[in-house]
Length: 151
Image (tube, rainbow, N blue to C red; front, side, top):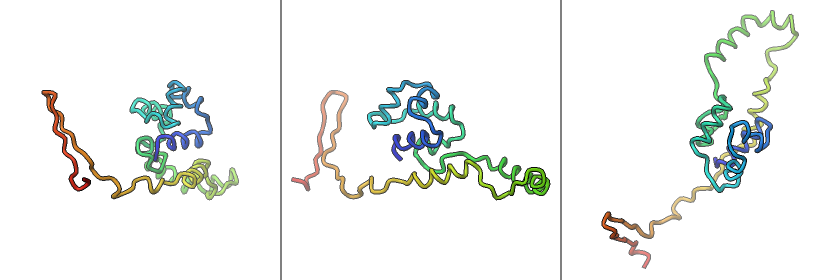
C-alpha cells in the first residue's frame, strides 16, 4: 500500500483532517502534504511519531500497509470474553444488553476493510530488463557493461 493510502486510512478511521494529524504527531503540515502528494515517502521518524500518537496501529500497517490496521492483545480479549461469559446473565439483567451487540471498533474495522483493498497490477513482471551496468572504481575510472542482445 502506498504511503498516501496509509495516511488516508488513518485520517478516515480517526475522522481527522491532514492539519489535525500534523498537529497530533507534531510535524510540519508541509511535510505531511509532501507525503500525501507522493513527493516524499514516509520516514522512520514520521512513522515512529504516528505510532507514538496512535499506539493501537500495527507496525506492519504503518510500514508496509498490511492489514489488519490495529493491534489486538489476545490475552486481554480472552480475559474479557471469559469474564463476559461468567457475568453474562448478571450483565443482561442489570443493563438489558445482549452479548451480540457489535462494538464501535468492529464497525470501523469492517468499513476500513471494505474501502482498503490491495492495489493489484502495480508490479509488471517481465517487462523490465537490464540495459546497462556501470561499475565505478575508486581511482575515478569506470567500466560499463551493456546487454548485447539489444543491439
